[in-house]
Image: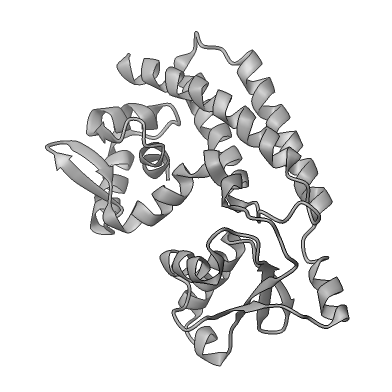
Length: 253
């Protein structure tokens, strides 16, 4: 996870084995553990060598990397909502393989779907690329190829009302504000004299913030105001600059 977290930042786009070993030391991971993890990630196609002893993200991790690197512009994916919905409908065929079904559920969660009824998940149709783009993103996240994705409009009043309550928007809003405050607090008290501890803290805090940003369902404004997510992104942009500077100093040492 540490190796992928570093490579997913895209800056720098590649690390030497020595740098990865030094990064592991900030978390108390010894060199053999880093080398073993690197070998496993290579065999899975999630990292690849671009020169002797120098590695970057692998082909099998590229879709996730592209997704993660989009956190700064996450809100740009939205478009005005006309009250329409995207539905994902599953049946026995999609559930037959438990491993594949877990991947499908994870993909649906990452794309902001919530379970609305038995075998049916819903989200507002307010993203810029509609159903076609959603099918592509779910496929990149290894959802079942046979999952039925359809645009829906003209719902009966009961369903239209129920669908609007599928997300805990107040909790989401409050969580983003708390995390933004934690980033500011970390930045204000971080001890750059202890570069090892500072590097570890910025990576852990940054990972938590980016995960929260990328898991936000991007609901329309009238379902969940975006001010808290906007604040979290803006705070993370500042924190990311701090983290990259600290990591640069730590790895150079």
